[in-house]
Image (cartoon, rainbow, N blue to C red; front, top):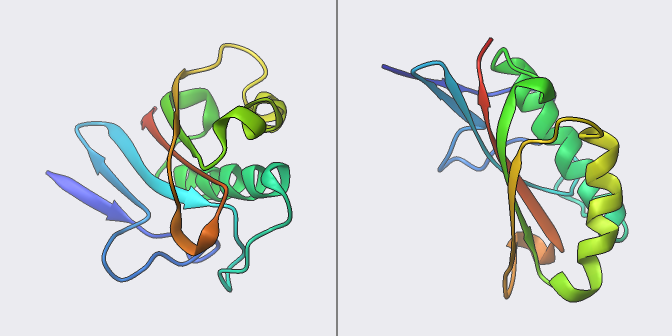
Length: 125
């Protein structure tokens, strides 16, 4: 059985997906780009990473998990060569110890012209 999660404090999801899905004790959080609730992108890649990860945390918490429960993160960057170290600086602020498994992928484009998108899978405690 699966349950969908939407958090009114997070950036609103588009009508074609939910913020997260809980299934068999796992929380699958949809991708977040670095924008505010009005879909305005936030500054440079560091600002966008901070906003995207903050939104991902709000969604995870609404599903009953937090970052210590995250087991896998996927990061998508439109300029991986330039932005990888900048994204990593912000990422490390949120996962300073015992970081989850992670994949970082370079992509051609992201919604709204974003530079970064993040998603995660967490175990519900």
